[in-house]
Structures are given as structure tokens and as C-alpha cells.
Amino acid sequence: MEPMASSAQQNARRRRLTHRALPTVVALAAAVVIAVLLAFVGQSDAEQAAARLARAWERGDARGMHAALAPATRREVRRRAFARSYERAGAMSTGTSVLAGEPDEEGARVRLPVAVRTRAFGEVRGEVSLPVLEDGLGWTPEAVFPGLAPGERLSRRTDAPPRAAILAGDGRVLAAGPASARRVGLGRAGTSVAGAVGPAPSSEESEATFARGFPPGTAVGVSGLERILDRRLLGTPGGRLLAGRRTLAASRPRAAADVRTTIDPGVQEAAAGALGERFGGIAALDPRTGEIRALAGVAFSAPQPPGSTFKIVTATAALEAGAVRPQSRFPVQTKAVIDGVDLENANGESCGGTFVESFAQSCNSVFAPLGVRVGARRLLATARRYGFG
Image (tube, rainbow, N blue to C red; front, side, top):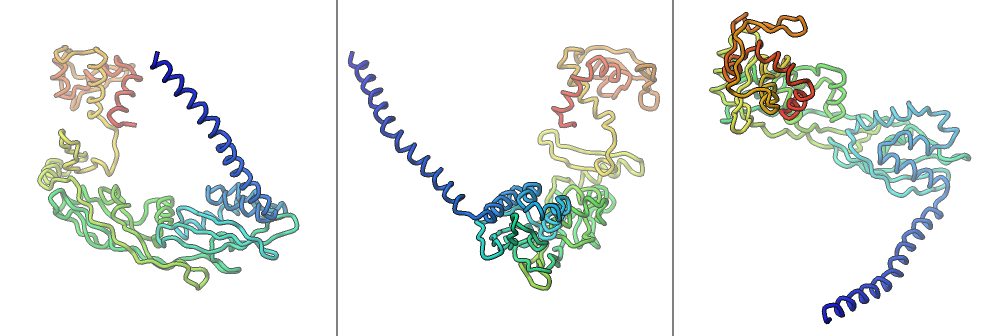
């Protein structure tokens, strides 16, 4: 009986504690609500509008910012142009986030403290001043960035740091030197994996590089490892962020650390030598770790259909579905016919035998019909497990 009495006493004690704590919780919640209401009631209409604009700015919500303005201002400043002005300021300043303080109405204007975190210039702090109109909150072009005075335009002068080097797994240089004169190691074997540096291949990429703070025309990786590792090789630009002729913020360019890859110089030279002048690509991977040891030809700089490498997917799907076993036998033939279309083996060779032999010889005449037999849904699911798509 004692355990039951003890349990009843504990339950009674919990109820007493709950009843005692409930008024405290309710009082705290009420205090929070009252504090919020008092803060809101204590703000003028213009301050409330500026607060809505500030919260929308922090979210990156140009539509919400525009909606906080007075009706007359919204008619005068179209939303698309309004949004574009903030996009340009963000790209120019390399801004990544905005944090606004509490607005304060003084006379015919509302002052809003704003801090903008940037990639190239650190955190930039200042104020935005918005006019107070009869029908609400006004807006002027200098409100796109803190610290701008009427008539001033936001601009910058930046420099890129020296481009970092690309190293092989043993530390030997694959590519090094300034972007305008890169030096490639391992001769032609190194060129096929290192790639090249040049002008941005598209306007979108050029705009993205500019938004990170680099000056117009900055060279970027256009092929090979130079392209894949471009963001890690470029480093961080530096310079001055300007309001008219005034400096709002300044920084120094910072070079990135050299990037050591898993490329094995011996394997890379062997792959490039085996390929020679033929069109094609070779990718050598360490099967134990998945690390890439060599990339030659068009292995990754000129994407091609997966071709026979997809037989790995077909083989996996077929084995898992029970459609074949390793010793299943297939006819030796030169081609398969799929939906009335001849699909030949490489160079018209005869190919077949056991499933293992057909896989080793990469028999199109075996694997094409097998893919149809397995079905698209299972093939797609298996391909995704391998990282395709």
C-alpha cells in the first residue's frame, strides 16, 4: 500500500505546483503582450510604416517594402523599379543580409538605423532617412543603402587578389600564377585536367562574379578544375565602397589558400597518354575511396551522355530485380533491335556469353534489351542512388 500512497502524494504535489505556476506563466505572457502593444501604440503612423518596411527589408521582401509606402509614393515609384534599385545596391555593396533598428520620427523625416553585412567590405552601418508625407511614408533614391546622402550614388572600386594555385595530391603544381598568365604543370597531361581561365562565359556568371565584389571583366575558370574550383581559387576582393566621393567602407583583397586535389600525376599522365589525340575522356577513380585520380580529354569539361558507364546502373537494377544472375547466358550477336532500331555493339563486334562476360565486354546487344526488361522506373531509381539526376 505504501507505493500507492506515495504515488498519490506525488500526483497531488504536481497538481499544487501546476496550479501555483499557472498564474506566473499567465502573468508573464500578459506582460509580453502588453509590452508589444505599448511599443506599437507608442509609435507614430510613419514610424509604424518604417518598421514594416524595415522588417520586409530584412526578409528581402521588396513587395512588402513597397507596400509600406504611402499610396502616392507607390504610384510615383513603381514596384519593379523600386525592387530593382535595391537589387542594384545589394550587388554593388556585395550585401548578404540586412538588420534594421527601431525607426525614430524627427520633424518631417523618419530615421532608420541599418546595418548591412557584405562579402567584400564587412558590416556597413548607417542610417536611412525617409520623408513623412500627409498620407504616409515617402521614399527617395538614397534610401537604398545606409549612409547615402541626397544626390549621392553608391559605387565601388575593387581589386581581385592573386588567384590560388591548384595542386596534385603529392603537392606538385597543376596550375599556378596570375589569372592572365597561368602556368600549367605536367605538360599536356596537366592541361587536360587543370583547364583554362578566361572571360566569364555568360552574362549570368559575369553578374554573379560582380555581385561577389570582383571588378568587371574578372577572369574566371572556364574549363577543368579551374572552373569546378573557381570560387575557392578566386579569394575575396577588396577595395572601397563609395557614397559619391565619400568612402563608406574599405577592405583589402585576401587571396585564397592553394587547393590540393586528389589527382595522381602518374595516373594523370598515363590517362592522357592512353587517350592521345582521340576524342573521348578518361576518369580514373580509386574504388576504395571514390577519390578521383585522373581526368583526361572530355572527361568533365565537355559533358557527354553516360554511354557504357550506365551499364553499371543497368547491371545493378537487373541483379537486384532478379532479372539475371552472374552466370545467366546471352546469345552472341552483333546487335540488338529496340523498337525497330538497330543498336550495334562497338565496331559491330560479336558479343555475348555469361552476364559477367557480357558486362566485361560491354555488350550493347545484351544490356539494351536488359534495360527495357528492367523498366524505366527501376532504372531511374537505381541511377539516382548512384548520383545521376
